Length: 114
Image (cartoon, rainbow, N blue to C red; front, side, top):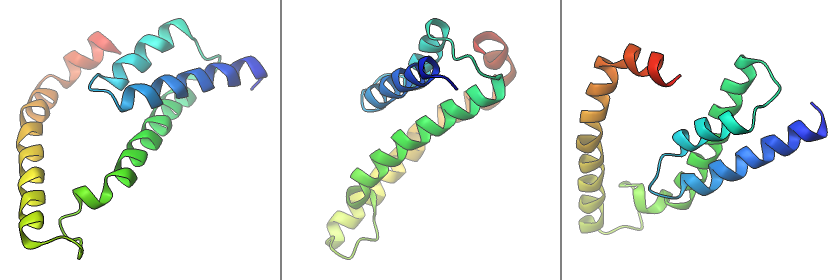
């Protein structure tokens, strides 16, 4: 991989790092950025690269908010633990519609957007 490809990869990483923290689709931005900044690599490498940089951004969020998201933390009071379980319940319930739609329309979404 030459220097220009490394620069493109760095730009894609910066876009991912910024958009992961915002309430917008970082995946959508990566797809759009890839249309303008074409990596000169195989499709398999490009797919793996997008997964790895998204995983890094998600892990950064998990590390930063681990205490807040961990209902089993010994430092939390019983009320804080209940509140954390309630938060996780709300997150799971809010993900169900997207999961159902994603499962039902997976082939259509993949053929249209990818």
